[in-house]
Every structure is written in structure tokens, then in C-alpha cells.
Length: 323
Image (tube, rainbow, N blue to C red; front, side, top):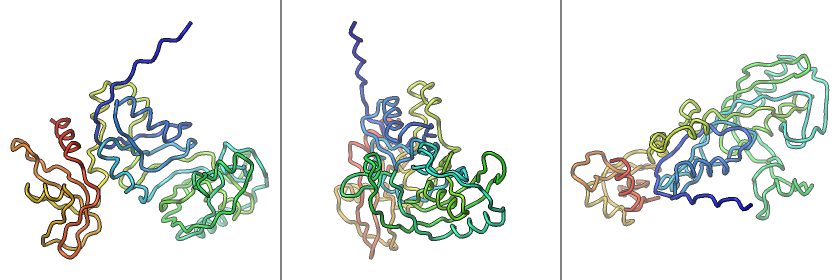
């Protein structure tokens, strides 16, 4: 008996940012595709991957918001994690096979001292089980083939490393940490390195991202909650496109200058030098009073220099959806 073909989803323009609390076990792309399907969105992307074994904040971008998703690759991140001491695994997390076990003999004072050592600028060797590419091939692909390749240490910054709880005796000695770090930090590697510095080794058994840039987990929605909603409620969960531009200086142009700016032309004005500017213009209809986002720019020597621009079609669709 042949299964009935799945109904084709009728895609539509959707613009904005959805803050997803990514569930355990899904890759970032799997989570993105599920939400894209639920919203029936034409175009979608995310702001950097989160491991399948990690949960928490995953900003998903739709439509015009995908133009600015790269901005959040550079954002600082905050995680909560549990490091199981005394056991090393091949992948530095609970998914890998155990490759070493040792007794845990460290004291609370030694833990505090080691955490101090890992605060600030540190150097990390990226793990083999990561998406970092070497000669066009992801490191995890080499690892799956049983190969280990040379990796250069990279500098990252651990802004804050807070000890939330610890257990040094018993069957499951572990550290519960909060990590506020720069982009490019591998928390699995951090946990493994802390374990080595304590003389017993370790691996992560839990990793949860609780913030990325200005977006905290308290603002996120779960996939389960999203699935239970009707379409109107799902669309109401979207933040506007300029939610990705928090921290940008704002410039609002008149209609004439807005049209020229949107065509890629530089504008002159009494602006101070700014590297990150969000540019707005008047809406096409006089009945609407809220300025509309045109794109990003930088200001230098009194010139407004266009960066990533929305298309007139994007702007019109955003206004139609809002109304």
C-alpha cells in the first residue's frame, strides 16, 4: 500500500526574529526547519549553531532578518554547564565513549584557583568534534573517519566563570558552572581543560545557552509551545527585524534621502563617526506614522555609507503584515 503524498506547504513571506529555546537532541538546522515549516516561511536562517546536546537560546531569522543574522555570530554568549569530573570521553561530552577514568582528589580551594586561571583571555585548541573546517572539510568529519588533524590554538575570552554548585565526593563528582564568554569559545573544551587542570579529567554532561547578545532564555519559546499555537499566535511570537540591531545608533531620513539611500547612494549630514547605524525612513503611506527600517550603514566624515539594505519588496511586505 502506497503512502499518501504529504500536502505541499504553501510558503509565504515572513519577516522577523523568533527566539527559540532549542530542545535537546535537535541540531540547530533541524530546529530551524521545523519552525520554518510551522510558520510556512519562504526564507530562514539562524545566528550560529548550538550543539544537538545543548539546549537554550537560538535566535531564528526569517525573511529580511536573515540579512543581519551574521551580526550575532560575534555576540558574547552565556552558558550554564555541568562538568562531570574523573571521566574523560572522546568527544568531551556525554555522547562520546569513555577513554579515561581517574580519582577525584581536588579541594574546593583548588577548584576556585583553577577557575580563576581560566578567567580572562585564554587559548583553546578547537575539538575534533566541531564544525570548524580544515581544507574545506569539517573537523567532525575527520573524527568520524578516525583521523586527528593538527589544530592551531585560538584565543577566546572568558569574561566570567561562576561556580554555582559543586560536589567533589560521591559517585558523581561534578562542577555546575555559569560561563560568560566571547564568540568562538568551545565550552566542551573549557570543561575538559578545567578537569585536566584539576588532575582528574572531565567532560560535559549538560550545556544550556541562557543568553546570546541581548537575547536571554526568559524571552524564548519552546518548540512544543509553538506547535500548540495557531498560525496567528505563532506570527505574534516574532520580534521585528531591527531586534537584531540593538546597540546600533539610529538615523532617520526624510523621504527623498531615504529613496536615494535605498538605491545604495551615500548621504551627507552632521553625523558623528559610528561603525554601526540602523537607518530608518518614513512609511510610504501618510496614514502610518512609525518610521520603517531601511537597512544598516556606518557614518564617517559626515557621510552615511550604506551597508546591508532591505529591498522595497521586503519593506512593503513588512508594512502589509504589520497592518
